Length: 273
Ligand SMILES: Nc1ncnc2c1ncn2[C@@H]1O[C@H](COP(=O)(O)OP(=O)(O)OP(=O)(O)O)[C@@H](O)[C@H]1O
Ligand SMILES: [Mg+2]
Image (cartoon, rainbow, N blue to C red; front, top):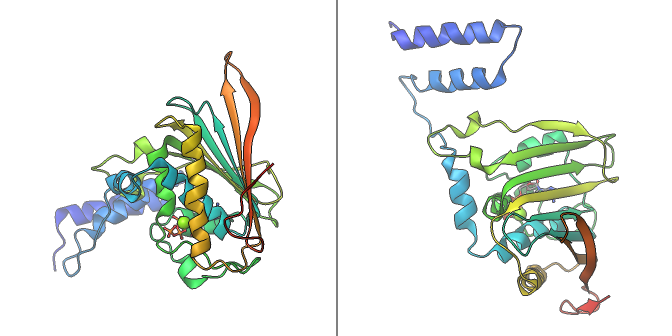
């Protein structure tokens, strides 16, 4: 069967791209995807990049629920501590950093878990390795709430066995409609470790201001994860730090409160310290 002219041209371009010394993964992917659209026997679903913004907007109505989704991921990663640092959060454009001491992600876990929609890791591994928690995550889409929260997400993650951390920057504005999702590349770098293991999510350019009562609501939403049957909850410290930039510099005003709850005391026990 004679091949359409476009197919011949695409194959030629793909061969050229594959043999080029300046190997361009993005170009190869684009050409291969386009080529597959000429498959006479099969057609495939493709994904418009605008889906990411849609997910971010439609997953949760409130920013408090959005943050609790991200803390749930820390819990699922066997963290014993999640620290929420709000910087300049009383106005739009502030920053929120969620740091946990969970197991972190390897490059492979970042690619096949964090960067994969509807990732199935928690379906295959519903119990966490260290504390044997029943993981809260199921759908593989929760972390897209980060798109609803701010303009940019910086992920820094490290595992115990690695000698470096991995840093990925995601600019949500890149995920506009009319582009193929896989065409949008996010830079990954090896950087110095921030800690032995764990993950830090920095939400830069907060979309909305945060009041103290909203931050407290995050905690209240998280009490629900007890309801999911987290018998071996262990200790999970949930801590807020507020930093405000008063004279154009960051000053640690105070640790507003730390919520400390322990399943063996009572799941609703709330002690301030
Ligand atoms: N703080 C974290 N520490 C380690 N891995 C994380 C962290 N946050 C996200 N991940 C990884 O990213 C994946 C996607 O997280 P996401 O919240 O989107 O989905 P999920 O938790 O599997 O399911 P759900 O949509 O029900 O929350 C997780 O399965 C996990 O592999
Ligand atoms: Mg989740």
